[in-house]
Length: 82
Image (cartoon, rainbow, N blue to C red; front, side, top):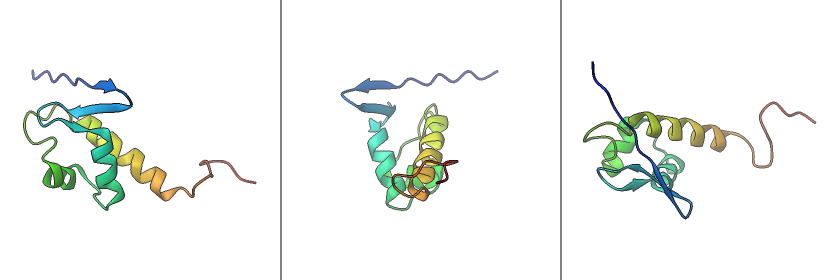
């Protein structure tokens, strides 16, 4: 049985996602805004998730969330219709 622990630290609005490489949530969100669409592309761009792998679930969730926000028109919430 393999046990993976994910630690995230929040400091002044920054969350360290990959503690092995010191990559923050802002870096990952920026990469998604610039076109990265997967864990693999994030890893290639900044090396996050390529060492121990403990941050991969968090990176995946950030990618999904950021892509969803990018696809939703500004000022509109999903499920809300006028």
